[in-house]
Image (cartoon, rainbow over all chains, first blue to last red):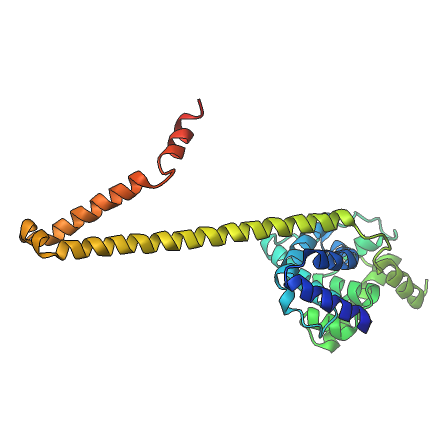
Length: 169
Length: 115
């Protein structure tokens, strides 16, 4: 893990000096989890636009990455801000893939369940349960206390469980 | 399905799908960065040109003001030295508009279209 981060820091420093090839390596390495996260947050179509915006901002801010956090954490923070900007511009639309209409008791697809969660519940659940982020990392990204993050994840899982079993109206 | 089983299922479903790196996406990012860098360079160039032209205009205007204060010009204009300065500045502004490159031609092309 530390070696991977050292490598990312070295690449980012080269990118800060204008080395496009180094930055391309960073994009190649991190685009998959970032786009997967954004796809869960905003739907697949908007996800790529936000990811592009985030990578361009990461390129411009490459000199600011100091290696204290993982590169993926730093990059996701940028993408999260892009997502929030995008949400502010396009309110009240929250999730760009509307949840499918559900018959009572019918089992839901994971995306449909996520679409019915709040933005922060969805982000916390996806990052901690799917992407292996620590609670502390996710709490920092979502700007909430650690305890609140843990209860947010628990609530999100509870909601998903209820939706899955068809208990949710 | 028990709560534990459901949590495991959900966790697995949320893991980013395994796939090869998307080189097309990488190329899109590189192209976008190249375009943004190009636009930034053009913006910098436009700003520095504007600053240089502004300075040049200020210098000429100051020169004209100084000229209007010169003894022979003042005696020629009599009590109307302020008016004289205005006339000089207006003449200068007219010349700038007349001689600035591309100031008139593109608007004519836009108005009448290409032959």
